[in-house]
Image (cartoon, rainbow over all chains, first blue to last red; front, side, top):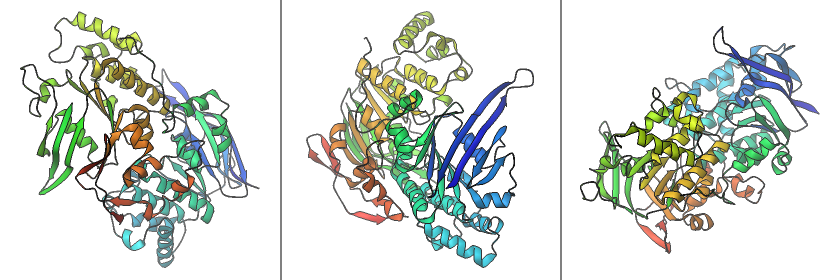
Length: 273
Length: 303
């Protein structure tokens, strides 16, 4: 069994306010998650705003250093005490996909420049190798290199641009892709295209995903494991079907009962006239 | 009753004219919650702005008309030219980001007395406002707070209280819960439903979340590329969607605990999942009260 993701007593404390009246906010409060598997998996982290799910993503991406504790990805310590990975090695193992693809790429550079840069800097490839790697990555997300080459962000739709973000993340052949709200900026009718792409990459290309989202329905559809976070604490963690089919924690139950479904209707309380 | 007669709204950008709403003919009955769905750029927000009467350059009414079916203070029917006088009184607007819509430097209670043309007796207005927010389940302290002291959900509730305080006949809510978490979203939507039940007014709700529409609305309007694709009772539209685009919108929502749709959901992949439709301007009545745009060919995979 491979340890796909393990966080050991991961803490992140932010200080808020000035010198005199500072407050401590525990964005991550003793987070312990272990996922061991032989097959690649999709791990969903769900919660509301302020639950700490983005801090968890940033910590695993080394964009924030943990206050204490450490994280292991594919049997390698990636952040916290005892990590020996260089930046390049780290980026070869873990890659990000961000929420807003229009902000992830600059408006003033053609988007394929980012793909080439990733291939050369992280993958250590030369020009010809990079060219081939970029073409292969774009093909695997259902785009053609010819359609992308030399174009700028305003020439793509949000969904296409997010597919290009996925292609960029695939170039260094990472084991784990951390996707922070990857579909929240995309039209509801086109979200499933990205979600299905993750599924396909898990099953066919052997990539694992950490899928950070507030959308429990897509998390249920795609993920193997799910962690429910509230105020920096993982309140419930386990196989997705188990957690969402038979929630134990009150907060998970509240979240699940608040989703507007197209199956059964809520009843509004009557207000006295 | 609001009647839209072949309404066309366009934007002029440089030398180009973009028809954001391209010939919408529709009758919205009184006393119902109507949901408007469609993807970004389909013209739903433009249509709402036009109904609200907030037509400013580069946006312009290039054809058709809106009949509001209400009379103004002068006794004449309200038109696009005079609808501004009815703002906050007969028609009000709940915008997407309430955070930016409340005046940040005055207290909530002062926002209630800050309307033009309200009762000059501030004390009386405040008394009524206090009673009203109590009825909507907001704490009394909220009145004394500044907007930044309230949470996003609380601010959105204050916005709803402000927008409905004068019992308008028509409320337009443009993505009222998009920036909110699901738990708060449910509270806000229930509040909106309660207010509607209480006052019997018409509410137009724009949302891209079909789940929200199913929960809240009585009627559904599906838009695509500036045109109406489907319009009918919510039950009927969800139970028996007629247009392939409507079907796709409804099917693109996974349900927790229901795996029967997995096959359909899995088929939405790659470039083929990104279909474009051609929508005809005429509507045909498929069933009583359930309209759909005349079916036409799917154009094929879009870029």
